[in-house]
Structures are given as structure tokens and as C-alpha cells.
Amino acid sequence: MFCSKCGQKIPSGAAFCPNCGAKVQAEEPVRPSAAPAESATKAEPAQPAPETPAQTGSAQSASETAAQPKAAPSAGSSVTPAPQPAPDNSQLAGDPLAALVGKHTDYYLAEFKKIDAGQKPRFNWAAFLLGEAMCFYRYNVELFKKYFMLYYILLAVSCMVQSVSMVATAGGGVMIGLIGSVVYLILALVVSILSLVMRIRFGKNFNRAYYNHCKQQMTLPASQRKAGTSAKKMWLFVLVVAVIWGVWYAGTTLITQQVQKAYWGSFWDDSSYSEDTDVESSSYYDETDDEANSYVEEEPAAPVEETHSFEVGSMEMLENAWVTFLADSGEQEIMAVGADCDCDGLNEGFGVTAARQDEMGCYGAKIYFIDTYGSVTLLCDTSPDGRALYGYPSNGILYPDSTDGFFVWDLFTGASNLSLVWGVQNGQVYESDISGQYNGIQLADTWGLAGYQIDYSQGYRNYAVYRLSYDNSTDTFTAIPDNAAYPAGEGPLA
Image (tube, rainbow, N blue to C red; front, top):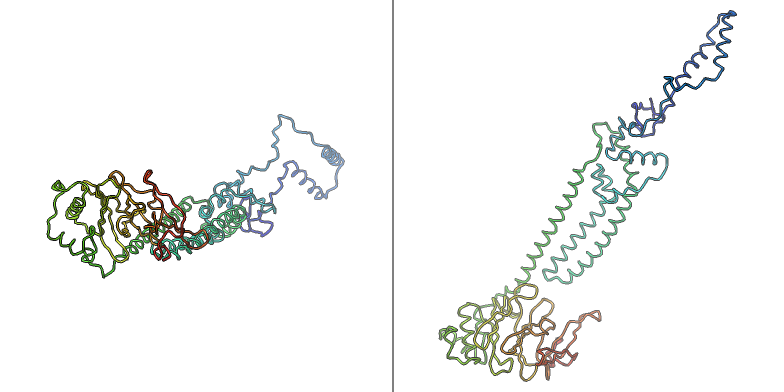
């Protein structure tokens, strides 16, 4: 059998031409009873001899017999019925196009017939759901380039922008990090929309595109055709994408942590720092620096258990307990202060040590509470985000009223200071309700404390100033908006 379009010989049983892909037109089956009659009819003119009467009678009888309609075969006759078209599955045997498709042959060959007939193919849900993985499953990398290459390029660009934004933010480049975050969000939105649109187009056009791919493959020698499907290639593609994403994420996280560590460590690389500076800047209470240093150097530290001769709650007991603690711990003192913070006639104290100190503040700081019996307790050594404590203490104990005193630590957070506040009641230390809520807390101009909060409600950086009024019956503060709460020249805008 030969193709009616290109003339190429077609293998027996093939549904489509292996050369041009045209549909094979099946030949009409020849009826067994018609062949002899036709042969006999064609043979009649080849009888030139004159007919005898007997022959004439025989011919006439034969003609009459042939003219009569044939009787239907009886139920018991052995006449073979006319052959019927074989089902699709039987026609697929030996069909090179069916062998090229592999799995789900019935579905795809039916779609190919509709395309040949000029009909619209169906939406391929497997292509929509699997997306780019379907290209590798069906050995069609060209479809991946056509439908998904742009998506992966934009995805890679968005990931690089996110990495730059994270590293810049960790290194103190807040503005670069902010711009990078905005660009990343825009790219992420574009990539998400593009992914959905391309998947819809891929599912809509896959059957026609795959048919063109199969016809192109049919032009190749059988040994060079990529027939069937490959789940191995599909899962290999998924694995490669997952590995690349994991390496990017781990690398970005590691670089961000290293940059952040180097950024915070750079604050303490000041060559003007010396231990003598720390020692000279430390004092316990209203003593001169020289007297405090000579006291530590000349007198041996007395153990806590030997301070029974000091009066409970006295400044001498607090001082002795603190000096003993420093000698035992080996930590570097920054400052210490004592006062009757809860107005019960007994003094309490707060002490600060640090690993380093420069003009910007104290790094690796630790804040301690010294109770009226001389016990030293660690209050805080990390910032709220878990990093080493960084900042500086306020100048002594702050009194919002005439009796109660509070210790304030201004925590440096990069863009501003965040004030941590502790008070004392019945000899026990507690963290105040305003701790961590305000920036730069200090004494107000006439009464109470003053604090401010950064305000962006107007579209730019501004400050909302509050006067903090203390109620010692509830140990809480009330915030009253008051722009004049800070003394002149000491506010957040000074």
C-alpha cells in the first residue's frame, strides 16, 4: 500500500503515513461473491466460437440464473461474513506513531485525528498540572524553552535581588535593602502571574504542539527517535531545581549571617579603646575616679559571707558586694549606682559590666541588680533579638516622683535607641511596663519621665513625645502626649 499524498510505501496495518503523517485511507474490502461474477462477465467477450443450440440453451439458462437475485444464506451455511474494521487497539500494533507516543496512546491518537480533521483539541490537564516537568516526561525540551525559559530567568533574577537586599540590610545598608525588597516583591508578583498564564497556555496548546513534535520525530530514522515517556528525566529535573534552590537559600543565609556579624563587630574596632579608659570611667557613687581605683587596688575584696558587720541595706554593703562580685567574675565594670529605689529605708543598686566600651556605647554588656542583702543577680545580657547587649546606661537613678527610682538602659538598635526600664518594689526588682516601649527615656522638664516614639504616620520620620506619669500604687506609668516634656536642648530633635 502507498500513501495517497506523498507516495511513500506504508507498512501493513499502519494508521498514519510514517513519512508525512497523513491518515491512511483504508481500502474497501472485496466481496467474495462478486469476484467470480465479475471475472465471468469479463471473460464472456473472449468466446468467439459460434454457439450450438445446446450451448445457447446452456448460456441462456446461465444468464437467467445469474439474473435471478441470490437467496440469503441459511443459518447453517458456512458462508464467511464480510470483514469489519478492526478496533483501534488492534490497529495500533506495528503503528510507529503509536510506538512513539507510548503511554495513553488512545487519547493522543484520537487528539491527532481531530487535529487532522481541523477540529480543536482538548485541554490537557496533565500538562497544566505538571507544567515544565511534562516537557521532560515527553522528551520535548523545545517546549520547555518556549513556554518556561522566561519564567525561570525572571525567577533567578528575583532570587538574586532578594539575596542582595538581605545582605545589604544585614550590613547596615537599610535604604538599599528597602529598595531591593520592593523590587523583589514586584518581581515575585510578576513571576507568579507569568507562571499561571504559561501553564494555562501550555495545557491549551500541548496536544497540538506534541503532535508536531511526533511528526518531526517520524522523519528521523527509527534508531534516533525518542519514543515513549521518561519518568526518570522528569524526576531528575525536579531534583536539579530543588538542589539549586537549596544551595541558593543556604548560601544567602550564610553570607547574610557573616555580613551581619562583621557589621556589628566593626563598632568595636576603635583603636582608641584601652582598659585604662574603662577603669577610669567607672565609679560606684559620688567618689572621684582616683579614689575608686585606689580602693580596688589597695584593699582586698571581702567575701560576701564576711560582710555581716555591714548594715543591711547600707551603701557600704552594696559597694562591698559589688566589688567582691567583680573580683570573682573578672568582668570589666562600666558603672554602678545605688539608692533607695522603693522608699523603704533600704538601698538597692544596679551595676553594669561590658566586654568593650567606646564613645558609641558598651558592647557585650551585662546589667546586674544588687539587693539590700548584697546578693548580685543578672538582669539582662542580650537584646530582644537575641544578640549581645549593646548600648549605654542612663546617668544614675531616675525619679519620676519624689520617692520611686528607676534604672534605664538605652539599647542601641541601629536606627534609634530603645529604652529598657527596671524599678524596685518591696526590695524586689521588676521590669517596668514602659520598658521597650519608648526611645531615649530621661527626666522630664518638671515632673515625671519623658520618652518619645518614632512616628511615620505623616509619610516621613517624626517623633511623638510623651510625658510618663508614674502611679506607685499600681507600679504603672501613664503616657501623656506633651511635646514640651523634654528640657530645652535635650529632646529627640536636639
